Length: 553
Ligand SMILES: Cc1cc2nc3c(=O)[nH]c(=O)nc-3n(C[C@H](O)[C@H](O)[C@H](O)COP(=O)(O)OP(=O)(O)OC[C@H]3O[C@@H](n4cnc5c(N)ncnc54)[C@H](O)[C@@H]3O)c2cc1C
Image (cartoon, rainbow, N blue to C red; front, side, top):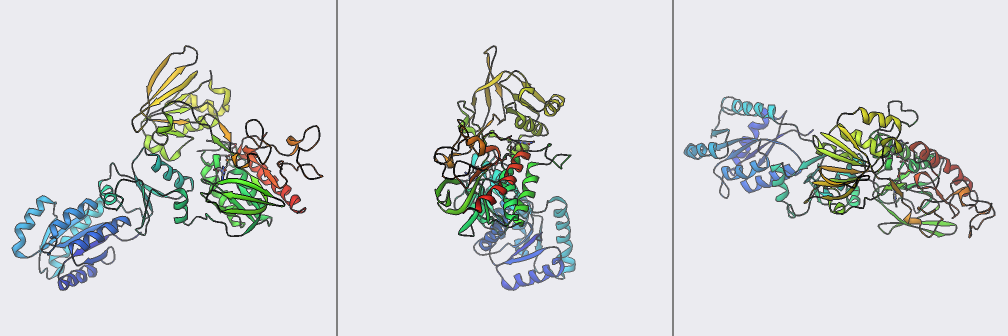
């Protein structure tokens, strides 16, 4: 943690050096003393310090400076550091000004020059002020800060990206934090494009994309090798498991993930049925451990990269990324899982990120503390979401189309929901439309039996209405079922024969698609169990099929 700053400002170099010397002598151990020779320079320094999230504890400023007086400087500087203690250095003739400043800017003290001996005339005054300051001010965060406005889709996207990638950050709400608003307004882009991400070195990015942010944070977004044995598409449990096994067994392996490793499991607040974790494990924790494990074995993991197409160029496979780069390899494992189905109701699209969220949106929980939130859906993920938000929200209302909760949910979750006082379950209830100006305000629902409609006031709505496979990158290349799930192994066989166009004498391996060397595992695969453990099992088991395949190329 960097020390708080004492900023000394005086246009007379001799006086400035003397102030600096005396301040350092006494405060060096606990404070960083910075000296500046004019009001305008000092203002610039103050802004830079704010950008770095450094804290200024005390301004010690000469009143008589040519282009900007000490009082004028303090008026501006205090907009950025309202809690800093402020002391004017004055000549005898300036005492009137100093007295005015006491009223105007809450001047804590004014010191007459010279202040000899400092042990009597300088240190006791400043010690007292700094002691008071220390008692009231919280320490600087020292990490990444995201400054924006709540209920904004762009701010939400960045917060979600950071939290899902487990990058610690502090959220700075520009609607309530006046000094931060002042800082952002002083940037060339002002408040027009938000959020602004501030880095500990004082630099910033305005409304960055996930990839720009990932690159700036040192995450890998580009491949290191020209060619791989195995490219894994998707970093959920299936993809991570195959990366761990592939890399640990000597395959040159790269995994490409569009958002954050962990996949759907990574958004789960608590997974209770995964082997070896009797008390449950959070999806984030599981994802972090598996990612570290894959990297330890030498797998490369690209983040914020989307696989848009997979091409066949026998015996090679080419994986095209959204930034137009391509990866060449012998084998591809598609482990792209599923995405949440979109709710088709008027008004929703405009409010996504501004009160309407798909999935658990864990970052938003504290925003809705003591508010009324709705969870749409009746399967396990909706149940977990409702339990999670019940810890923060005043009330959680679950909206289910079906007649009862237990139909699509594990019994242990049904029991928990029933025991939780601030969760209400409305069955036979469908969302017809949503309304809100810039943020969700109300939901219109229809009762499935009576057809009655009514509006319900809502602060947030989290939607969990099922999922669809993400397989557009192999559309037209591999065989899929009617819903888009990828067919593999025996499911490809028709009357005991491989599918049309299959070029080999042998049948497709377990988990192999209709294109030799192309594999699929986890939720994306037709017939898979849609559970963490089965995705992990399939991802790991595929690696042995890949070894068999590699023996033939
Ligand atoms: C909220 C929630 C709670 C759950 N709780 C449990 C539980 O308690 N127990 C349990 O057993 N199961 C649970 N599940 C189900 C479980 O999480 C899934 O079965 C499992 O995550 C499937 O793993 P997967 O690797 O096949 O796919 P996913 O987890 O869906 O991962 C796929 C990954 O691929 C990435 N991807 C997709 N397309 C591309 C592309 N084109 N380019 C690059 N990357 C791409 C995605 O971003 C994603 O990270 C839960 C699911 C949810 C949503």
